[in-house]
Length: 474
Image 1 (cartoon, rainbow, N blue to C red):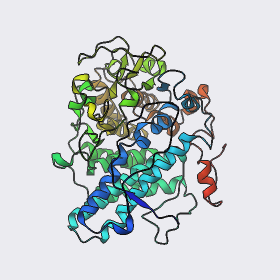
Image 2: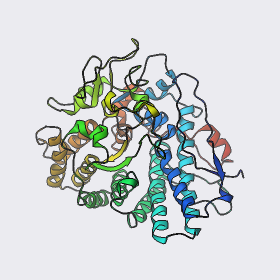
Image 3: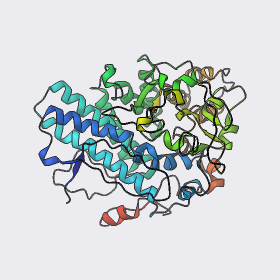
Image 4: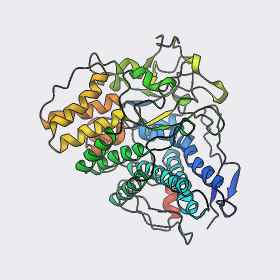
């Protein structure tokens, strides 16, 4: 086996967008054999997990077309000739050899390994016991998040509960159900240790609410509606609330606000280094690269009077509430962009690139309310479901839902998820888990029985020594 290295450096990639996408190896690596001896080592190793959350692989580019372009609310964007390979995700023609299929797979496993380094090695360090237990809980919560990404995109994958003692990483794929159960066990264990809040210096570390919030979402995917309902109720009782101003919610001033359940700190400062999450989606040649833009189908999905429509979609020629005139620098680019990642010029810190200070909202309280509504409705509790969905609608300055039957309310909740979580990488997996993918994505090329998951990358298949079975249709 090759030696496994733990990356301690936090990389800040600053590259222009073109067709030359290459693998960039981590620098400043430390051999694990010479590490994990002090409390500071434990802190650095845990920070290395967090650094991946804002990495190119996790949120900068591959995830945006794996989770985003495959849905019907996001399209490639930029101009037609730039990164045209992304079109394969829009029409479901990607293959086992596709760089995106492979890149997202590799990235998530790198993150799982970082978490497992902490989970296996930190308990052996002579250090403050309370801090030790907390760091391991943080690692388990984050490992659960990375496995959640893997299972939704690839289906069942091998489970590594820590670093293999014998160094053997050749394992068959576990079933999808086994992976979900593993994720749930990690989140339950983490929630029993993690604090509910941190000091300002530790903002962005995962909390008890984040673990339980993600657990409620996992239960929704597992179709364990009773546990999804009960767990989301726990989160609702923890003091979170909707930001009354939808625009404020996504601006730097709204970061770590009352609605933040799981949010990635992308501060442009030592130890953080920003991210390219906003840059790749920023207005083409004004703020950023102009990728992953809203579709006409998304615009049409908003009902009249919904303030989220204009606060989610940024348009050519408009002047924002913060005073920026939107004017693209590429005549071949489209005319709409994701306003949720917009950083006003007056607040932009160019030291780390455009929008590098924009935090990444992985789980918001609005999502928790909609999880609660969906689970309650599936349990036949339409009253509770109505209460939760109406909170989200009312914040958008819409009236209460008119749906009353279980079937009508189910459709209304799914619709509410679409417009509330637009362009937040939930649409494709939501369509798959609710059985709507063929209806909405069939015209794009989605094939039932195949495209619910992606293929296992070809090199992973080859390196498995025959232990992996490929997903159907690939």
